[in-house]
Amino acid sequence: MTQTQSAKAPKGDDVPAKPAKKEQAKVQSQCPPVSGGVIDHATQSGQVVLDVRSQDRAFVSLQNPGKKPVTIKCLPKKQMIDVPGVGQVPTPEMSLTFDAGQSAIMGPFAAPYIGAAGTVTLDVVDGNVNLALILLRQKP
Image 1 (tube, rainbow, N blue to C red):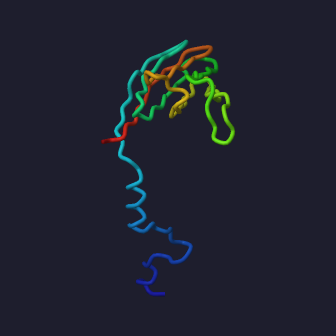
Image 2: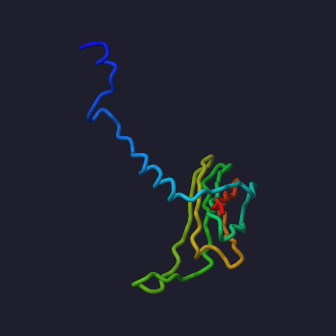
Image 3: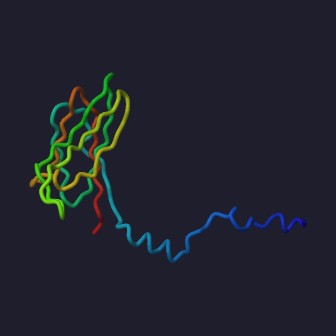
């Protein structure tokens, strides 16, 4: 084997496949550009009402600073939802329980959980959480 042969890249299964440039451009064009921000960072307990505005994709970053597990429930604004081919069914409960010192993310919030004023209501059960609302907005 010569020195120039050993410097060549391996062939076959040893080489990771690179997507074609045309494929990369196609994938990027399907992902709308977004801008984001973090607002409403605070320690909360009980019911918390968050403004999520309908044009945003909202997530809530949660951290449990306490010494016991905390449960967060997202209260539905619509009690029943339409499922094509099935009819009306109860809105499923959206809840999350996490241990002391742990972090979690909840969202995005579907239409049955967003009220007419563009708000989501979270119920913090048995404790308090550090909460930050994260909004992702499509750029015009």
